Length: 297
Image (cartoon, rainbow, N blue to C red):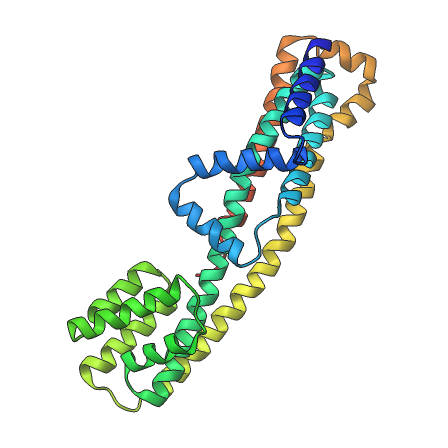
């Protein structure tokens, strides 16, 4: 054990000596960032860049605090289970290794919520512009030139306009956008405008007004769902952490000396490892559900 501690201290000293011009944690964060840029999928890099542009990406200090929190929590929990520092170090490393995946989930959620808000702006403003222009393409041009949209929606609307003029029809433009943004409100609006354009339907004001009301109701439902999910997420995390600490109740009932003798048995250690891993899977799976099911549709 003394060797492990000395090795950890030696590594820290070497890093610090080699990077005396930088604060050590900044050096560590930089190296982690370089590893991320090398191995992260290209699509996720784009998502993360957009989250940064939105000002919702964690700062290096926040990531360091998250690492310290996860490492400290993993060490405390695993040590309470096994009273073995070596085992605790492995759990600490495992907990830290999960952080990039959690960052990935969070960025996807933030990006998905942003895209839904942009889709709502796109559909609402296109319908409102149509009331004035009575032309779907002109409506798109009005929405694009107004600057209410951000990339990637803005670039895709521009692409729709160019495709419409190139093909002399809005059909290909609509198929392009509906495929890229698989939302009911997008498909319903596109279908309506395709029908209006092809069949020359008149007196569409009531239909378009009804669609605006449907969009407003959907947005209200989504935001209400986000509030409910955030509240449930908080309770879910508290419950998961309490499950880790159930071992304290066992130690209280048995006594610490009796518990220490009990964990000397191999099958007991296997059971304890299984409890930690199962509870960790439970929490990670819950995080995955919370961040992926944003309630947009």
